Length: 411
Image (cartoon, rainbow, N blue to C red; front, top):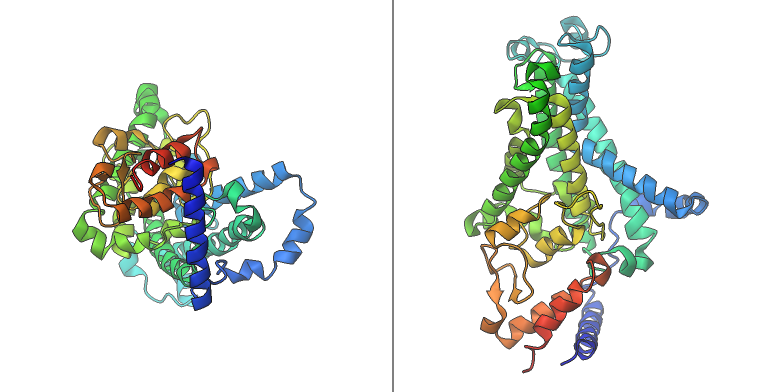
């Protein structure tokens, strides 16, 4: 059976299925984030005067800022900058307040926090949380408008799954869950930042001469590989049937992820992941610039990978998979566990293969061989493959995926 014939049959089936659901009232407006849509006409009025390249640049910067702020990491990063350029002592203005001023603002007894090296923690927490919320709802809302509202009619040009959208209920769900994780992340970042500013000891250092240029240069790949490989296993462990059922399944509620999905994780798993990412601070010497830059890179691509947009890795990122790699993970569940280095999945046999099918009931990342599947499994997987955007892949990968399976359907 040719790809063209298969495409026609699948599209007809999907159209019929969609019509049935629409009559039942299942399909609703997929754009559930209303605060940006409310001002869509006003934004569009001014946005149309910007060149396309400028609009794309603004969207890229917005993703970067969102990645840095959404977990409250901006304050963590800011503290490292302050310590690097001002030394271990706090600046005379803005960094610390007295107990008397704390009493005035309602924080009556901070002596216990001081004994733990967390003097003025409430102020760190308020700052981290405020900016995180501003980034999450403001910048996140802008990105939603830029792609999911302003360019919704062009979904086949930019969306990884152009014909499938989260329902309004799921979008509200991911925003509420993401907001809870945002609060947790901001709290953790505030505690770490406050601890550092109060003289807390870690393995982060600020003078390259302390460990020399050789280690400084080597620490870039060492830190990046350490964090990414540990994250791969952290992610894969949470796909164990027991942990998946009780924790990670919540994140996979969003089969068509958006930028809001990045923090929509079970609180237990979220705290565990944050521990993985900041663990170098207490395990081995790492220069502040290396640590901060790596965190920014990880958080930036965390937003990109969950955006549902067919972003491609740049030429200077041969290790970095395209956005469709993680989008496949959400679409097919137990496969493609890596984040910033695709090789880990190749190494451990969890990379998605065209002669295997994957779904929520097939665990451990190995998939199920096509020859062992029944007709129903093959047709279901074929519909999934057909729903992917060709443009999200490089070359003819998507057509090869479809061709490998279509020849087994209705044999």
